[in-house]
Image (cartoon, rainbow, N blue to C red):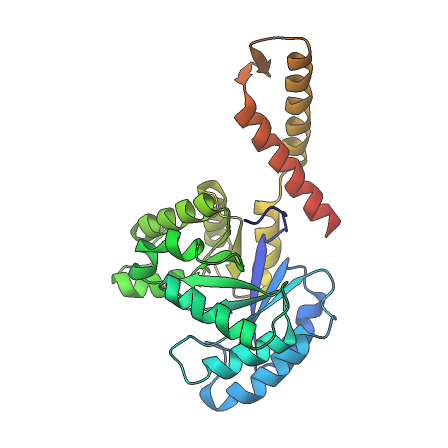
Length: 289
């Protein structure tokens, strides 16, 4: 279970082969970084990128940002060396693409343990195929080291033969299944990327949809997407004020022995208090970062 709240509003992929990009990332306001050894790195650059990314992840030069390494998938020729190197580097997490089964999770876990990964290095499993959608709960529950599900919406759309459309109707079934799995198992879940960096309005709309659906944050492909994602997933000052007032009203009413409690004209109960406490915890975690 993931009891500690960490802000993961904005989780930015950074190309592992690009030294300038890794340097630039130190000054970005993303909550977390995924230093990528997979899609962003050409086959003949994999080995050099691996060294560069592992050095960056273990450097301690990224401040309070979580730093994760995305390795190549389990069935690729680079996976074993990626996992061994990442385990030694000890990042906050190892992100693994196309995790389709409990067996995949266990194989990743064994690789990390064999490489001597510290306990703080978690597994972030990318779920991006129809098989993963249908086995999301089992995948999420497969290991305590697995703490985050990451939606791979581009690959999911490809596998479904679906179109990328506003509102993401073709993907909603898969998104919903994975959200249910994450909440049933107490794991964090991150929304997939938005491809058009020249469409800020569309990006913000998809962020809002993701937050309303229940995602904890969004994976990003460009630094220009950081501030909008941070804003959408941060509780507003008004929401924080209302949450604090709701809790105070509820606690005062209970102390007075009242059976029915209202706040701003609405009946409230324990579930509303739980939601309010979560809003305050998220706001405090963001402020602490």
